[in-house]
Length: 312
Image (cartoon, one colour):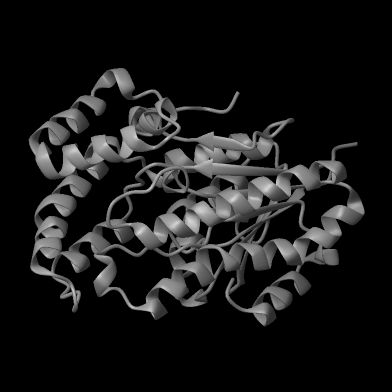
């Protein structure tokens, strides 16, 4: 007798990684999953439904979910048969880029409310059932910025660092209940949202920021960031493929980076636990040797680095 499909609840499925992941799982040839693909605004479900095709209403269900609302989380789970979630994928997130002095505390709090507390809220909701059944898998779409800070991404990186610490701590306890946690850490992901965000911040005022910092942000960071996305950026489809393999793994890993081309950049921090090598090298490349940085990024984009990191 075939095993019943595993219920997979995914947050943030209106576009990007969440949409691609939901569709790939729903189209699993062995039909091992029933996907509950959620988003805050159901008015944006058109792209997901079109991509799902015949899977819609069969192996994929679209539902409303605002990870910042207790009531919305409870309502979403009440629509799942038995309220039982076998795999939770915390994917919903928001970005924030710019000079710190020009960012409001409200904007910073919104990043943490969504990226960190939104994930915590979902885990608290599904964990009692997973513990009761002595099985479950919690997948977190983290970031390489949860491993290393990146200039002008201070608050976003902080939210991902918080996720990494929280879920690594929780992973130790949950093994006792046969519940696994996996932190998937993409590097740059080329999406329409990222492109629009970079365009918006390039003309933003950032009141209260000194002229030198604005110059560094607009004339050094933004060009380097665009080069980074174009040279080593992955597609949401490629990242989703890695997550599919993580979910299907018999022994899910705690951490899985998705982009081998980005590995040389994260290796700087691993080479020197004090952090000085990474900070000083990043500073020199961005502020003193920007042409060398661009050349290095183009080298990373060459064919020798095109093999993605797949889970074993």
